[in-house]
Amino acid sequence: MALAVREILGSLADEERRQIVYDGDLLVFKAVSPMREFCAFTDALIRESLDTGDPVRAQFEMDRDDYLARIETLQKRFREHEDAKRLFLAALESTGVDLGRICWDWLYLRVLPSGEEYASGRAAKLGHHRDTWSSNVYSQTNWWAPIYPITAGRTLAFYPDYWSRPLNNTSGVWDLEEVRVRRRAGEPVALVPEPEEPVDTASELRPVISPGDLLCFSGAHLHASVPNATGIARFSVEARTVDTGDAALNVGAPNVDGASPRVALNWFREVRGGASLAEAADPRET
Image 1 (cartoon, one colour):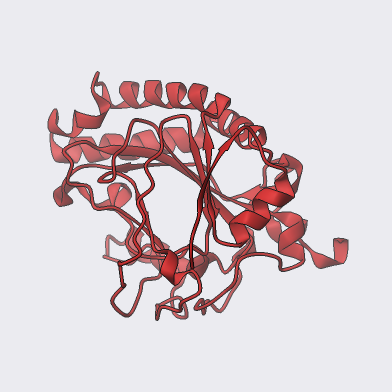
Image 2: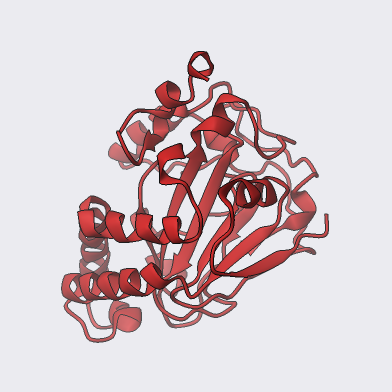
């Protein structure tokens, strides 16, 4: 497909935004006012947790294991921090999202250090995948933003040719509970379902956006972390939202190759009220 990357100054009507995402285009909301405050808050948390004045090069200031341990502690602090949630939800609302209609999974601070020797555990990069291979929720929308300036070597890669092109994958046998058990046991395990055939990267697109911008795209897009060999770590934030009305009506992006045996409605909870998506999107209530 001819994928478009649309830059938006200001907000979009919620229904219009959702339809654009379900049709496969990427949206970049530019200079989102609450995101500036969010990035400043997150930067302060990173500097405090890593005890550094240069967060993007901090991996070279300390022992590898110490660095990765600090990253894990930082991510846990961030995930539980009410100010992070408040500021990010304010950013979503400023783009036009109706917070009364959405569920989300959780807010995640992803750190991708430079060099393969650091890419493990919570600092591991994600290979080619569609989020919907694991969630099986096709009204899922992904939000992504950098905390510090990025380049084409420190961003996400998208493969728009696969929007309507099937790719053999392991979604039919992937199970989150098995992943959790094996991770606790220290065993190697795929964090997300993976392709079972080579990926044609001819259509690869690497968007480069600025701190304060917010990237919005369908969870059905094939995408991956760009391997980082830039000498500078990538710090980014991500979240996944689902419109409860669309989920109830099975409105969303097309499923071209997902084979998950279950729909992970319980992964998502209302941002207001806390009910699970399974409860909020119950068709009997619409």
